[in-house]
Image 1: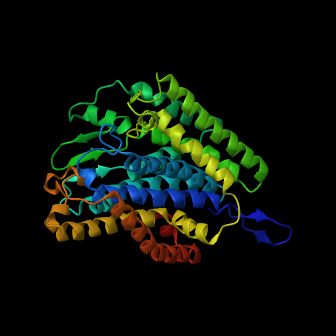
Image 2: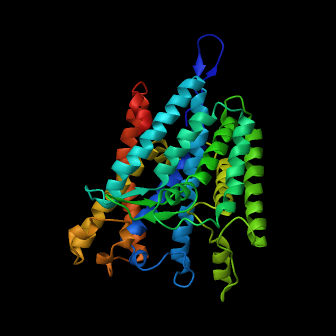
Image 3: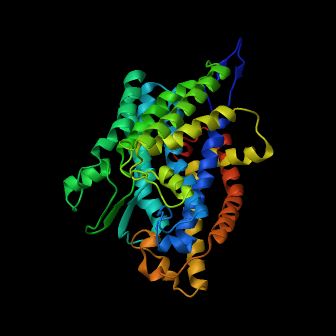
Length: 402
């Protein structure tokens, strides 16, 4: 993550770069790919939810659970990046950039990324997921940056801590009011004409995450003491984890899905961790952002040969995101063809696991992990080349949108 250069005597300018943010972003991007490989290749994905405690097992549950960190971390760090980007721009320029980039992300979600998920050029469904939520949140942030930081922080915290009050509201039906409520808070699949809409990421809590991420960005100003930053990250991370445990244990508020005692202690633990992602509940956000802040606290150190490679993915997240979706789907078309299905069965009209023509298709969890590693390793050279191209061509404005 580039940070505003620090002025030195004379004409010397020293550019300071803190790699821990790129490292965290790169790590969650790679973990995210695991979930998408599972969606398209694991036999169980077509039969049941991996967090269904009546059917899952420990490896499958944790394969899904670990990927919960991806979207909130990515949104939170996007807010921090916006703050740091603002140290190099006027407030007006930053506002325009955030709005236009947010609008581009929404359009990309509908036209480029939806096509990657479905391979259906007729667009029978628009799939609105994390990139849509990120784009809307960015457009809201474009207006919010004109407010005092304290107001931005309070607004973000109110959205995060208060949005579960909306849980009881009904969003059934395919009318305009139902669509608005779903866009704000409830996941829903709208069967409409000429296309359906899979609204997977209601935006209210994601806006809250981006707003607090924006305020968080000030910890990475060049003038901020590194030791103080580490202490702050430790206290914030430990506080979020402790708050998650306390609120979850009370079992009254913070998630629409209470935990319960199961027949086996391990599954009781799974029930405790099994919080709601769509939309991300208060407990989901605390459970994912708390450990992520601790990760940042302990990784602000020189890179190793391995972490240097993870950082590459963190520097080109949108590029990797689009590439990995198309590659996974292409491989899924091949896998379906060689296992007795028609290639056209992977041309979808909804989410892949909803395709009844693929019943019986799929592979073991071990196969999923092996393929995931192959895909990540295979995409690394392309991501590295693109990262180098971006760094050499910083004057090209359009590179900041991909």
